[in-house]
Image 1: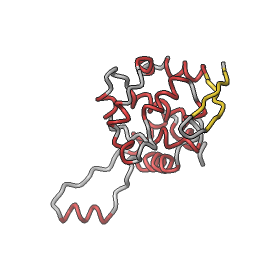
Image 2 (image 1 turned 90 degrees about the vertical axis):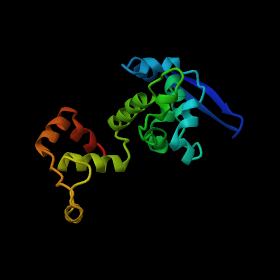
Image 3 (image 1 turned 135 degrees about the horizontal axis):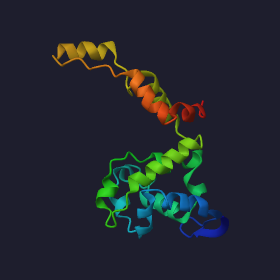
Length: 183
């Protein structure tokens, strides 16, 4: 069910119509973790503690993302122009640790990131990294220069991952199908 509402921002004098997507809102809230979302009372402790919010001068704002999810403002969350609102999260868990209501924000952000991938809106760096893991079994393939340096430092050899095992796990998640949408 979709409804249009008027939202005005006095500070920027920006007035626009936002669509509340109750189906999306319920999908988030009814997920295993999303049920904690209802306890958020918008105290902004998460945004105050978030290292990404601090270095981006508030451009990334976990409180705003949680509010948008809670209100069902799907159009403010998804889309290429809004990608940083989801993908800015580094999953450091600082927000989870400081939340007085114990809302599991990073888990909710992961749900939103997964939805973004499903929509074909994952950032290029994510697709490149996922493809590298799918092909090599790890995010950073071993380089001869790194191997030589490790030998010089007397460090043990890094075991190569079982690429077939990694591929088997990732096939179960249908990762290859999801990242092909982007190509």
